[in-house]
Length: 564
Image 1 (cartoon, rainbow, N blue to C red):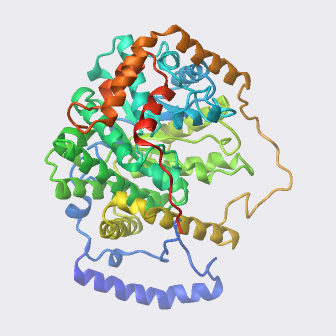
Image 2: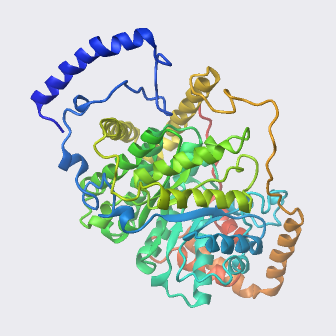
């Protein structure tokens, strides 16, 4: 970025500036705080100059958009050519209710669907299971069988609309149901597009919606990658997710390091399953949180692309440039939303969405202002969607590629982020890899420590949360919130029981028995592949709980060790 002689001159001029200009100014007007940090508690210098980037090489570290190492973006023209996909997370109550919300959002200009499932579905229980009581349809849509999936996407052309599904432990089963719906719509496999979250490792680290032990759970993920690579070329079979890691209290650096480390596990396991890296790597995708600290988040996205390109090319020997691409969905930070003064969340979400766009995301979900209180109302969801549309069409930030490139601050943050991730990789490798690190509680402890430090900073007033620890109000005007129909649970229970009464019971029994034999088999990448058997089971209208119980019986359930 600058020759050595120029850097020396800049340092000399900076020292003169500090003496002649800065010192008198500080004597008259001291700075607001003794120490400034990012949202992740990384120290921020007063001023950044080319001297902070002494080894910076434009072609090596930045290059051009659409070319290795992709720091400036994965497409040559980025948003000048095509805007990011605008996806609003939606799902509540029954499949019919969510189908109506899907259609409403598509009418408002949403470009793709993003499906939220309720807690019983996420944990692999049918709606009439005792553990599901009181939770059916509350935090997402209840899906018990192929009949529900058919209703969820009724009159939505799945050959034209891409769908994201946020689910991990039962991901293979929900994906099979989606594929079966596409079959019924006559959509050929090569036209089916979308993304399955399917990142089970982050569940053990952060979200805790795991069911089975780690090894068979990773087998299930790998099985879906193998099936997708062979049959569904437009489907992203795993969205490696830092979002929930960040929501659990991780720093931006930890989110990036642990997410990429999880991604490397899936690459390694897929290669062990017999796939060539370039046969599946182009369909891996990522999912990141986007918090309030705009420049730190921008740096995180830029470092992520550079890191993944180098990992795939140098560590795994990928030859296809598409395998080097880190394609990502982003979501604004749910953990940053406050129940106090909820309208402030509109501004927070706008800043976070802007950071994701400046960071170069391919897909974006903006949270609604009321999500600290309830599932979003139509009005709140519309405001969140309009936020993206205003950024896209009115802000001007989409008119040039990577407008922040060359900022001394942003480039320094990007380099620091990359260096910190490599250091985490070294620590993880010393522990025996990411699975062993999770079993030993390493990422869990790191996140817990970071979350505690951040909360302490809030309580000391070092980090200001408007409306919470500063600028509070004694009385706040309430906003309308969405209420879930309590009768929906009873209707959903009757629905799943009706499916069980009307289906071909012998076909269900046969399909589940075949699945059980494959799950217990010792040839997982040969005759004991799981996805074809899961597809057969859901086509016969086996319920989610019945399929998941097969795996529970064969593999058992995971019990998390104490983390001290």
